[in-house]
Length: 375
Image 1 (cartoon, helix red, strand yellow):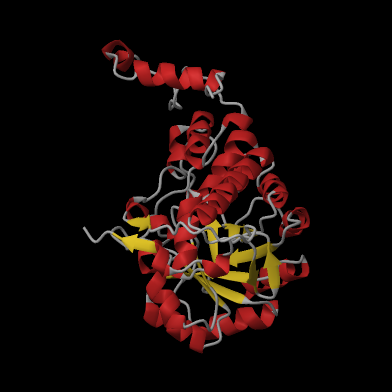
Image 2 (cartoon, rainbow, N blue to C red):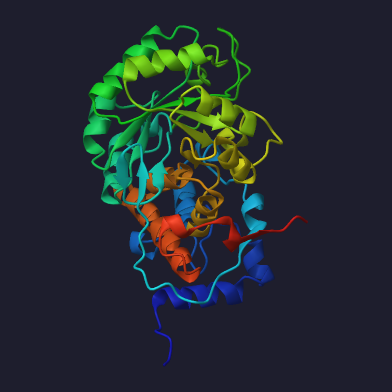
């Protein structure tokens, strides 16, 4: 049967043919080029086929300064992990659902916290919540959101968590935690490991605004991020919800967290922003999972862009994967519909990878299906 001829195929073929032309290389294009597209064209949403294409469209819509905070990701660790598929097909239907804190989630995906989303879209977190809910995906609401937590949680029909930073004065933070719990947030995520910035110190990286210029009022979080178990207990008592630590990268700390009664861990290096040269979360995930020995769930974030990435994390023992930047790319590019599209694409890829490896349920994913290239 002849392959179906489409405009996308034609554009793709033309782009590949022309890519080697010195005349084409001499031209300057406005914004990134998607394969086979003429310069300046904004791809229709239904033609976006993966998260990387969504990133390219988002770049066309943001200033270079603002986009730089969202661009890229460290993919080297993922490329060293390959699958060893089985060929005897398991006849069970594909099921991506997982149990987490007494809730059954449609998939292992959760939208990660991103501050001040109105810098990227007029509706900000409201549009993010709508898009995530359309994909049956919970979201983590940032303590530094540009919309009230009550409004965001009301739109997050698939569920929501609330993320905070430890502060020198925890009183106002605990009040916001209680407000988030009252709004229906099902867990509290405490981000640990951000740099200490004394009051008045302005040497941290700046967070750009939608105008493209750095805004000194939007520096990294104030206060002292050196957390103590007493602070975690305060948060637990205020929230009366599961408490999850985001930023754990060492098995000893993971083991201590489990022993101290923390309800869950998110393996994360904060996108490598604060400690250059830090290991990628996927590289330390297995050691953290082994350290907690099933006592508490382990989740992970960090440069997850494809369903194959998600399956690798689940095979190492993660219970869930946080997706942040790709969701923001979708928000920038197409609003709530873009959020839904990028999540649906990653969910679909995850299902296909599980099927291709003859592992139709999350519980069947294990490390025997992976090989790590040590070179």
